[in-house]
Image 1 (cartoon, helix red, strand yellow):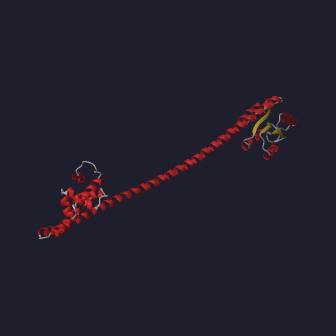
Image 2: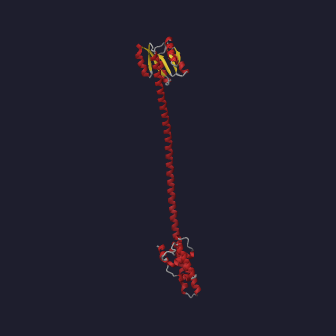
Image 3: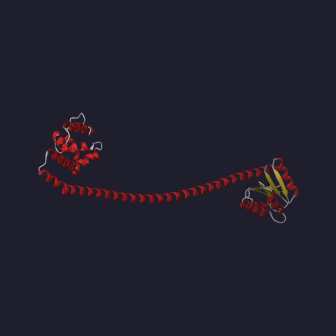
Length: 303
């Protein structure tokens, strides 16, 4: 129910206003001066203040000024006389919602009160909406600020990680390069030692008097050493890991232009065994049932 505080020093006016308003469903409290009005305002929430302007002691203007400051949700309607309209205009500038002129007209009272309460509700709604909007803006701003700070932190962390990865990548490149250099150096050393230490003795043995069995062993030794120093053999082994060591030896000799019987003699194997190895090599290289010369294909591997 709507609470209305009526302030007027004339008992008859208070009674008349109270009777009209309560008949229309309002709940009214009446007081005779500003002092009593201040006490009532402290004790009870009022939706509307209906106050006379000229009263003994403090004036209605003083009361209106206090209510507008301390009770912004309370609508104010002023009660005045015809010859006091200048004061009414002053009160309107202070933010009152309207005024009622004595002597009263019942409809005028009800319309003024209803309009004042309607305006009060609209202003309160607008104020609450504005406050909620400001609150939402502040909360959203705080969220965006937090998100922005987190984004900045993430960018910094990402930058650090990128630098670390870049440094790690550089280190890996250096290690890989060093590994390749070490590998090349080791191969060069092995090849150099074989050519400098082993090959001269093989050549010397070839010129000596050897029986057939010794010649065969020497040929096998020379072939195996050739496999070690042959870049073709290393290339073939890296590309076709499925080839066995013997098959790699056979492929190397084929690449050098050796025939089946020559390969058999060098490896001390039968010709049929070499034919079998040739068949397996073709199968593993994907040349089975293809009219492709095996030596010609092997030479493309070296290229």
